[in-house]
Each structure stands twice: as C-alpha cells, then as structure tokens.
Amino acid sequence: MQIIREQKRYDLFCKIKTCNLSEIHPFHWHENYEICQVMNKSCTFRIDGELIEAKPGDIVAISEQTVHQFIIMEDGTYIRIIQFNPNILFGVTDKILPLKTHITYDEIEKNTELKNKLSSLLDLMEYEEDTDSSEKNSYYKAISAALYFFLQQHFPDTSKARTGKSSKDDFYRIVGYINEHFAENITVNSVAAHFYFSRGKLSSVFKKYAGTGVNEYINRLRINNANKLLLQGHSSTSAALSSGFESIRTFNNCYKRIMGITPGEYVKSR
Image 1: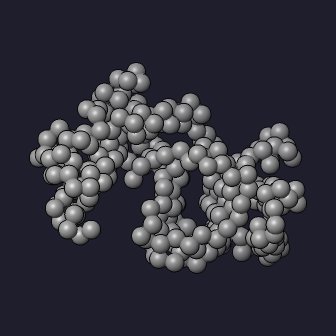
Image 2: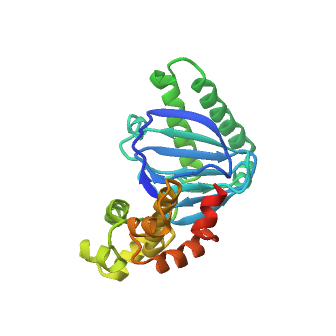
C-alpha cells in the first residue's frame, strides 16, 4: 500500500468501473470531486482514515484533497464513478457546501420523487459520457453540477467537526517525505524531527488520514520494494538492506508478519 497523489486531472467523466480482488486499488488523493455509487456488491471505502461500509445503491461523496481508497471484497464489483473539476461548481456558485459523505440507498428510497430524479440525473450523465466530445459539452457539465447541488440540497454534510486544511497539508507533506525516503534509515522519531513535530502529533495526524501507523506504513513500503527486488533476482539480504531494513532478522520477522509467508516462498509462488 502506497499513498500517492493522483496527478492525472480529469475535467469530467462518468463510468462504471469493474473492480476485482486481483487489482491494486490506489490509496490516493486528487484535485477533483468524486461521486461513487456501488452498483451490485457491497464494498468498503476508506475516506480520510474512516471506513465506510457501502451497500448496493449507496452513494459515497469524495471531496477534493480527500485521501481515499476502494476496498473490494468480491470480484466483479461494479462502481459508478463520476469525477469532475470543482471549477464546474464554481461556475454556478462562489461557495461549495459539502455533501454528506455516505448516502445510503435506504435514505434515497424513502422519497420516491427524489429517487426518480436522482436516477434520471445519473442516467443522463452516462448518456452524455457516451456522446462525442463530452468533456467539451457544456450540457454535460451542467448535469454534473446539477447532480452535485441536488445531492447537497437533500443530503448536506451536517457534521460539526471540520478538518482543518493545515492538518491535511501536514499529512500530505509527511506522506511525500516517507514515500521518497523509506529506503533510508528513517524512523518515526526521525520523521517527526524532520517536520519539527512531536512523535505524538506526527502519529495522530498520520493515523487520522491513513488509518494506519507511521511505522506500519514505512514497513509496508519497504516490503513492497523488497518484493520487487526479490523478483529481480536479489538475495533476501540485498533486498532487505536496499529497502531500508537494518538487518535480515528484522526483515524476516516483518516480512512474515505482513506477507504471511517467507521471502523464499513468495518468490516460488510467483
């Protein structure tokens, strides 16, 4: 698992994605807004560290700069994904009010009129996506804005807790630093010192958004890197030391805990 910033920025798209267990679903964030609807099988979304169990028909709203991931439990899981540039919304209003993150199908089904209108908007999004030059189609953009504001009108985010931007910015900087330096001799304490944070603050900020500890994240990056080296023919010792582990013993213990097998068994299985 590596947390990354998605560089590809779509202006607008709508698609139904087929997700399988064998795929690697990135743990990432980006500049766009995203509205996801689970179509056929339950799955889990990790949104800023919070796990959301989504059933068929549920909608999960992901705002810009939100760290998220799909966690698929069955092959052939269909998710309708609508992603759009927030500038589309700014063309209508100068203040974008947040959506409720998890809108359940039961909530939608309570109101037949709401359900039918929402279904019509989603169908229009899919239809326009299939037309030529949909990204340049002002009608298509208007529908996406209408969808967002329709959902916001009926399902506003009424939570009182708001995440401060500075806290999330800290997280982005921490992740970027760890991604770049995990193969070096870094520890939780050294990362905290680099940012002039206390160990407690570093751990708190990271766990809030990643849903895991700093040390666990570093170790998983190191194991992933070691696996690549093992498959390239490196010995366990070479792969371990090149990935940031201080000794082969530490590597073997960590590897068995995370992977459930030994490095040799991993290579044979590939």
